Image (cartoon, rainbow, N blue to C red; front, side, top):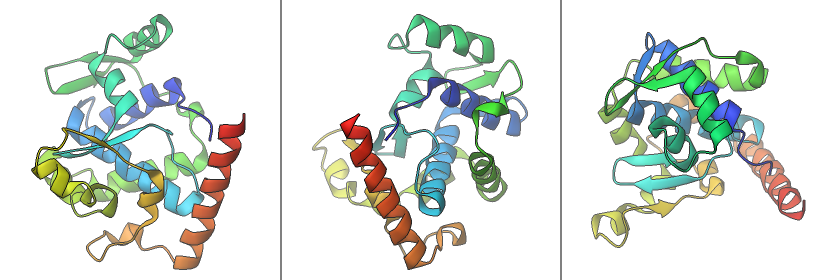
Length: 196
């Protein structure tokens, strides 16, 4: 699987911030990104960002994307420079877009899915999105361990994003045949990526 594209991460944060009028809550944007990656993976066999997800008490978090949202010291000078051009902190829990998102980093399917996710989930606040995320199998499998304090976070696997649950939003109601095919494509690309 091709690794994380930092340009795409910054533009995704900018894209969703603009959907909110320029400023977005960090937890909310992380959940919108998770929903977008989940849906894109199920429909097209690849996530949008290829980030590493962790299950935390408040739901899934894309780890590297969080570093960009937080302007972390882990960012390289080049990454910090792009972040500076596009984003700024507007409070402890929010980020502000300084420019329009550069949509040319996205595929048509990336934009289709991000727009769909915002259309159906964008009106919800970060706490509601957090509660919704707790219904999905990729987070639920860590619920007990998180409650018992075995760790503050657990690495999630993209393979689990293909699992169904009865409470899922209708956007995630893909045919089993399509899911199996896309899971196969994803796993094959994962193997190829590990060989490169």
